[in-house]
Amino acid sequence: MGKAKSAVESQREALKKVLEFVEEVQIKLRERGFIVREAYIVGSRARGDYTNESDTDIALVVDGVEELNILERLSLIKDILKPKIDVRIYSTKEWYSETSAWIKELKKEAKLLPIEK
Figure 1 (cartoon, one colour):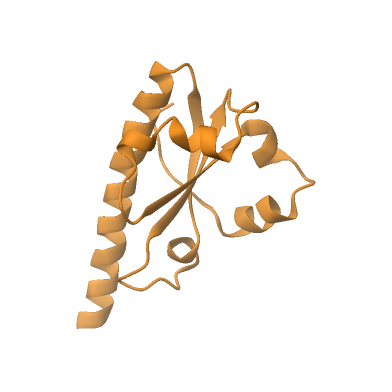
Figure 2 (cartoon, rainbow, N blue to C red):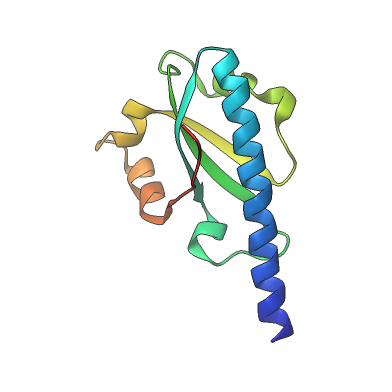
């Protein structure tokens, strides 16, 4: 029982931190003219095979980032990045594209986060 409770608490704490972080990202990106449309937990925390040492991977679907490369996208939020939270930023077109095998696999495990729009 103790281990299960610890796992639930770990997941709950990780979710709280991610939601707070996503809110910060939304504010930061909105200031720069970008809109976060959706946010997802992906990776081990979404699949349920995480450990206490696992980071939390999130995928953000953002309007207006189409012309930016991966590093430029991350540089938009570099001053608010947090340890143990790994961020991937996709344009709406990329996320809903049916041509990317990587994104198709990511979407299979993705868990939508409740965010303000």
